[in-house]
Length: 309
Ligand code: NCD
Image (cartoon, rainbow, N blue to C red):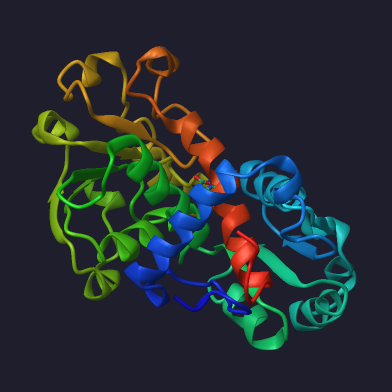
């Protein structure tokens, strides 16, 4: 298969086919099995520029670690305070400038549409690392890869997505990506945090909605938990109403299947208690480690017409 990722922007998982996801996962497997010396050849001399206008630990560092692990380098800004946007420079001008310093741009922004705008302006490919409440496509890629590795396949699974489904952008990218697989999806959220209705038209999976996890916990193969996105609430009183409204602890997991897996894009606040970390079903830290390699594979494919993988 020709490399469909070469020079391409990654803004939404809606734009990516199942065959393309399969290719990404195969490339990830290959990269993971390569010697350090061979890996370092893949992006030798290439530069990634990150523009992070919102806080991040994992996404920015894993992109940086991924690029280093395949021989490339990263430059960038880790907060809006570090950039000339603080002096009034526009996003468009900022993107134009860093486009000339790098081979690929990775952007995170608090506004919907910011990543797409950057992609329109930049000549080099742009990867969204989270744009407003819309999407976080590379998180979904690593979520799917984790499910594939930890469960053996994605088709046929019952997947529960729990928490703040209204404002979690990871959920939207994951749902659009899961639409390409044969899965049953259970969305579990208090009424105030239910999925945004307008997004449902692009989700093809079989979906059922529930107010409480107790109704479905016993049948789920994957329990994907999200944090309440406090910073995205337009009204703090609404946040206060849903705060602490769901908690995954060992009592809840006592009813889960023995081979279920618990995932979370992280950061966790209080929605998964610390006692769950020692449960063998907790795989959220494994998910983080897969993330670096999935991002390395994506960077390899985007920046090389024929990656040496
Ligand atoms: C997510 C995000 O930024 O949307 N973080 C991440 O990249 N893993 C999830 C979150 O902040 O809750």
